[in-house]
Image 1 (cartoon, rainbow, N blue to C red):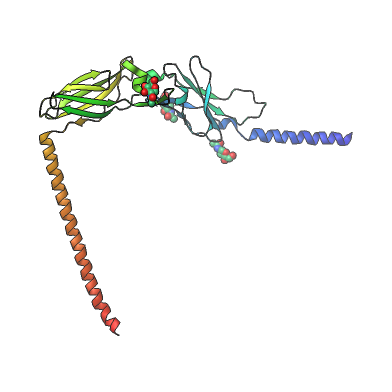
Image 2 (tube, rainbow, N blue to C red):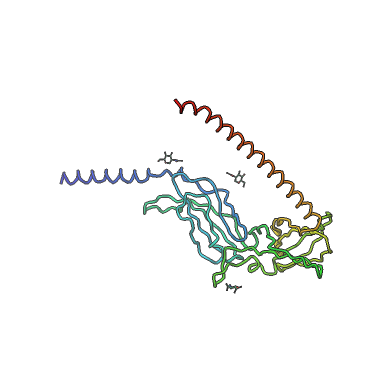
Length: 286
Ligand SMILES: *[C@@H]1O[C@H](CO)[C@@H](O)[C@H](O)[C@H]1NC(C)=O
Ligand SMILES: *[C@@H]1O[C@H](CO)[C@@H](O)[C@H](O)[C@H]1NC(C)=O
Ligand SMILES: *[C@@H]1O[C@H](CO)[C@@H](O)[C@H](O)[C@H]1NC(C)=O
């Protein structure tokens, strides 16, 4: 009986140390709740970002829509960002994210994990439009029309047949392109809008035109406009000529410099060789 009691005491002591060790494995004070949670989204690719960098714990992200359950991404991650694009495919839904600070818990841990909630996010209203790209342009000299083709940016989302949806597929007539154009010789700018990705303007014969494109989502109150695309110009007689002359002159100068440098090097090499053979000859003869 006495030995049994002793055993029991030893067992309790053993258990106590074990339990203490387990709780000592993390200090709740080390575990921080996420702050400054932001959505960063371009053409529907969306990354959730937050602070601070975790030390001795991890984060897990959960996202839900108005009528959908919480779904997890980036489980037990040491990062402070998470690609949540795949959870936001219902682009008109209002989404909320939670960043949970994971605790390495034992089974008897009942408290809720510390977590922080993000601002609400509606991809359709809030994703930033990427800078549009002018795919190509075509000057028809016969009827004096300049056709400009804009590339509809692709999104990360796919049709059932596997091909990627473009921003046009998602926004449809809510997406408008505006072309800003001017004669290369003047600064007066005109503009024309279209809800297709081809824009046609009248071009005067012999004139060069410069133009860029901006995308707009008509239904939005904020973030309506994209950045402007790069400016492109149609080729033109005089400008082309000037540019060609410049390129020719630069090429000629570069070529002459190369020839001079090469001949100097070759000349020096020969001299050095000649001197070397002079020095070595007597030695060889000994
Ligand atoms: C978090 O955001 C607040 C404003 O919302 C800002 O004042 C603060 O500097 C930010 N903290 C960090 C660590 O960026
Ligand atoms: C993380 O754990 C290591 C080792 O246990 C410790 O040295 C370090 O101070 C901890 N860092 C923080 C921020 O608690
Ligand atoms: C896939 O489906 C979409 C919409 O139904 C269609 O616009 C697209 O052309 C299709 N792509 C292919 C490769 O069949």
